[in-house]
Amino acid sequence: MSTETGAPSGTEPRGHRIVQGPRGLPLLGSLPRFGRDPLAFFEQLRGYGDMVRWRFGRHDCLFVADPEYIGELLTETERTFDQPLLGIAFRTVMGNGVVVARGADWRRKRSLVQPSVRPRQVKSYASTMTSCAVELAGTWSAGARVDIKREMAALTQKIAVRTIFGVDTPADAESMGRAMDIAQQEIGKEFSGLGAVLPDWVPTPGRARIKKAAAVIDAEVARVVARHRDGDGERPDLLSRLLTAVDETGAHLSDEEIRDETVTLYIGGHETTSSTLVWAWYLLSRNPRARAALAEELDRVLGDREPGIEDYAQLTYAQAVVKETLRLYPTIWLVTGIAKEGARLGGLPVPEGTRVWSSQWATHRDGRWFPEPEVFRPERWDAEQGDEIPEYAWYPFGGGPRVCLGTRFAMVEAVLVLAVLARRFELEVDPGAVNPVPTLTLQPDREVMATVRAR
Image (cartoon, rainbow, N blue to C red):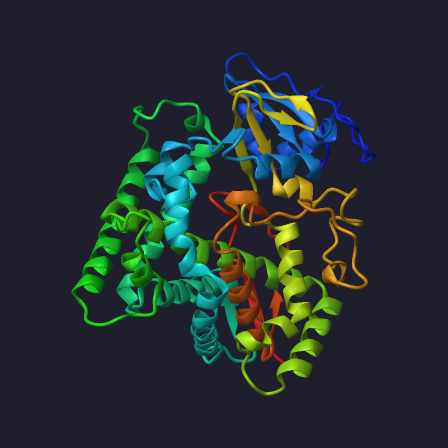
């Protein structure tokens, strides 16, 4: 994407200073420009400097692009930067889960949720990830036409339903999936439109749609929770672990808290990984050399068998494909915080109440940290011969104390699914550009049709 006319466009180090960005309009600031194309807007801000002052509606904002400042923002969250109160659409879907909660409430919830997604637990879910991918592979054949977006959504949805809820009936997946699709679209629309500055009490058609979607989600989660509580014996799914978790006082999560954390885990295990896999197939289709390198590794490490968690560490190129995909198309494309009293970035004071923004999209495509930033090159992640990448130049899962709890789950899921399918097939994506749309996650703007080719 191009740099804004009149904005500096150099990629040389620019020192510790705050520069003035676009002035924007009275009352609205740069909201209209942001709403038209948030990703392009953040790249334009990056052209001004590494710390850029701008306005979002009536809010004073600071955009940061240098990994040093991003690291400070992420690691100082809870101490000198607050988690912002995100829009009503986001909060209607996510509730007050671990992603949204603040302070002591956040610390309590994190301590209860974290054990469910530790590496030892993710290991127990790996066989489900592989078996679901094998089931999908059985429906593909050479020459078949598939919509990768639809296929990956259905696959990761099945994995999420099995690992989180411990169920596998079509109704569970279909109703939740439809509601989540609506929710994701409406969150993106509200966040980048006028709804971002409207008071919560103002009714809009989009807010009505998201309330209906949230009601479906609530009903589905309540039904599954009731089924778990009525069941006998221990179950290995994530929901069962949440239901039995207790805090330091011996208290369990409430029904409302169970609902919020379940939705958070569902979005992390389904929506984000689905998007990552679609972009990975798109990039591999456009890069034959990377596709051949992945095939070579899969043949060498796996031969004719299916991958398991014990193979994950050996599938280094598959991991690199996922990491490079997340660099170019990070599912989470924005991090924000609100400065508390005494906040500083790069040694410079940040006024209390300032909204600090950082965009994975803009930083991941900065030539200072990633040579040939627009090029898909998994080799840059080679531990011995790859690029020297500064900490927090790549942060698709956030970082600091609020780093995504599902990072390990998401990486293992993406790598194992890719290994199962790419061991058998190549996907030849139809010609034409597929553009990213920033909703709750970074989604393709259309169906992604491909022809299945047997290897």
